[in-house]
Amino acid sequence: MNKFIRSAIFALMLFPAPGSAQDLFAGLAAYGAGDYATALREWTPLAEQGDADAQSNLGLMYAEGDGVPQDYAEAVRWYQLAAEQGHADAQFNLGVMYANGYGVPQDDAEAVKWFRLAAEQGVAEAQTSLGFMYINGKGVPQDDAEAVKWYRLAAEQGYARAQSNLGVMYANGKGVPQDDAEAVKWFRLVAEQGDADAQNNLGVMYSSGKGVPQDDAEAVKWFRLAAEQGVAEAQSNLGVMYANGEGVPQDDAEAVKWYRLAAEQGNALAQYNLGAMYSSGEGVPQDDAEAVKWYRLAAEQGVADAQFNLGVMYDNGYGVPQDYAEAHMWFNISAANGATDAATNRDQVAAKLLPADISEAQRRAKVCMASGYQDCD
Image 1 (tube, rainbow, N blue to C red):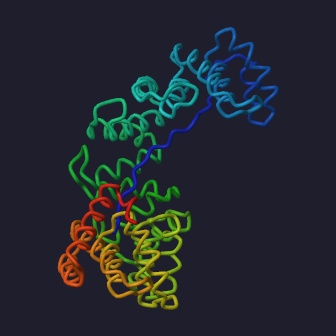
Image 2 (cartoon, rainbow, N blue to C red):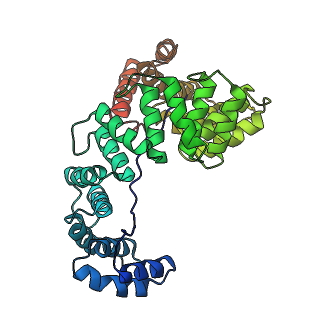
């Protein structure tokens, strides 16, 4: 029921360099006070004279639209001038622009080039972004070990996102030997700083007893912290804990509350579980039509048990008009995805259909699966 979350944050940075001219710091003070006009007035002459710090800072102003119309192309121009002088923060920000296609054609290889230059100067955000590019094979050959190398460099500087990503690598044994205790170490560092994804991941470790003694109450603690920050998977996981009475008193209504929050964000397992609550009338008034709604949403994301239950609903006419062909289609899809008893149910439904109807249901199942569950009508 649980997945680890891995992501990299591409963000823009502004830092002054020691030894900058007085006007540079005057501009920085004005910028910090929200006086963008003064910052622009102070930095523009310096940037035009070749001051890399001023060029980098002007790039940020144009990228963010601070005191000037937002203009990514102009931001790229200033970042490029500073980056070519070896300005690490400008190199990172230029990488961001290429990674996202802001002001330049999107170009992963060019993004990697600039991330690497900044990363080699110790910029933690660039190191983390470079790790992200390696783990996803963007602009470089996919290489888990190389990703770990860069995540570790940033993590050892205390950069939270890198610490979280490094925990994921240890949890999944990607680029390093699988090591739950090491994963927990990194997740905890970030979770205690309030990072919601790491809090959810730490909850997963306590729930499953991986790297720590199994402890449902501790799992609930971390799931709740992440769920209250809006992490859909944590909300779904917290719903499971309430539904099963694990680490908290069993409470179907509370389970439904958390399932719904996650389901409305598109979490497939929460949609399936919410459908089950409506189907059985646990924590909500029994409502087959509402159950079908949530089962379908989960089924269209590939959840085999939801596909199976949707077949049951059509087979029996629960919440929908009885339709054996539709039931056959969903049982067939569910069977292909490994759901127990789905093939048996499909064959039982087939006995109620004409050969032509079975052929059509089989055709529709193939179309549905081939479309990634987007064409299932």
